[in-house]
Image (spheres, protein in one colour):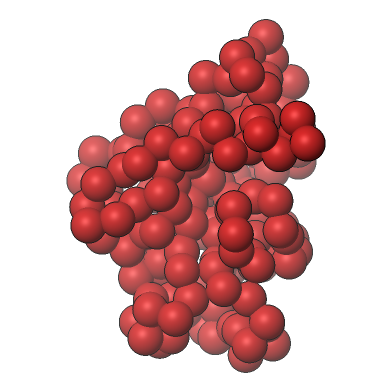
Length: 158
Ligand code: SF4
């Protein structure tokens, strides 16, 4: 079962989108130097279709994207909820997923995602805005993943 500890409207996490970022708890990845260690605990409210209905009712008119931050303990549920967002908004609202896994979990499809970030946080390599990062950020189009990680690094240089 997915739970979310918090959410926020953000502008940097997904380039060119106004994003409702939903911070999922129960993260199994245990990255050293984790930015939000509390997300390793199984805390927060259940994130299901009903909870998404409420969030989209509040913020759906103001956002262009919903991004699931985490959820690696239940990847199929993340995929199912991304599909639900596309379905109930007629694809008006895009979907993203920040996964800490190095590759897309087995059995997960790209079909219901417009953006995917892959890779654990490794201190010496840094996050997406670091030129040495191991993490990758992809735009998904027609089943293909296009690596656009460089967009995060350019932002930092400006
Ligand atoms: S994937 Fe993110 S939340 Fe999970 S341990 Fe790593 S840095 Fe922390």
